[in-house]
Image 1 (tube, rainbow, N blue to C red):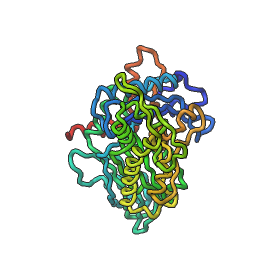
Image 2 (cartoon, rainbow, N blue to C red; image 1 turned 30 degrees about the vertical axis):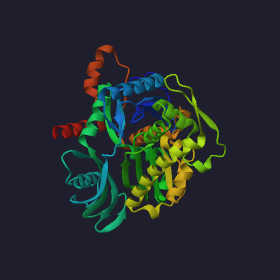
Image 3 (cartoon, rainbow, N blue to C red; image 1 turned 90 degrees about the horizontal axis):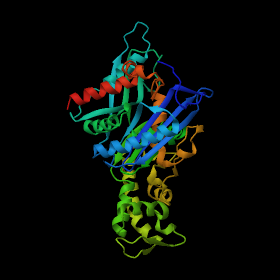
Image 4 (cartoon, rainbow, N blue to C red; image 1 turned 30 degrees about the horizontal axis):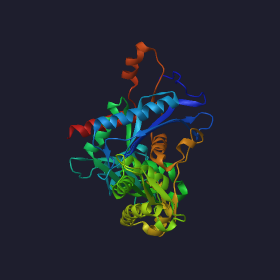
Length: 439
């Protein structure tokens, strides 16, 4: 690939290792531009962060194309201004209560002369596990291996290089509605950006807030966003269960709006500044002033009244999450307890309420994995998914630039034609084309 210098990219960074994550959420759209350092190969630098209020989505699903496109454009524009690069491609997160998951198995034989398992054999096996019956309106998003079995010997997590004749695998298959994926894809493309890959949001968030030790001993991630609450259960460093619930922080805001008779923006501000998820944790019951509507006089309420509105909905969200964790069958194996993240986890008292409901240790998960750049700007649960999308891409994608390189104006169209797609980019577009043709 052409290695022309990037606009505003520090010399210590590899232009071909710049990745952009785009979190298209119900209440916000966030874009993060990050790069891998040349001097410290395992250190990533955040070059730019852009976020904009989301409009046009409901419970993680696009309901208005034009409004969603405008929100994406604003977030991308802000990220470009901060990073000094022109964004060309992104890894996009997807959620919504249309997401489903189930377990599957596959088997292949090893036919090469040495009877040694190769990467191609593993890929054939993964392809075999995809041969499951799904409704025509659903498509597979991820196939995540749980364990491999070589000639009857189970508990194998890395079979490449082993000798054997029969290779089996147990996998976790995540699928979603084709139309929901198509709408996200269309919105990003209409904003002038290509889609490198589409990643399930709780899977992405896990890369940002969970460490290997937690995944080893067992942990549940509960990401309380604006429109959806995303759940991922891990044990032995493998994801065992995923779920998306269509109740989250926006419902809490709606309760405050309706319960107190105020506007949506006022309810959101009130929740963030004075909200508490547990009434009994309020030590000083201060008085909050509510703005008057249409020329009416301002009103006053006690902080405890606001908490009484918030607590029942937060309890409902956490109880739904607990039900999913129990449904996974791993509730008794979570030695690391539960990690809460997402904007909904920032309400005061949420961690304490979660400990009471889950009856296990709970901590608030902050994004990690970056060593330089705009680190402080993303040290918040709000950015867990966007940061996770970047980390996921660094681990799973072949090196390829996500940003526009500096090229002469007359060569721009030729550059885009010749270099616009490769590796994972080609894969996602071929997958999309196949999906859409089946509609």
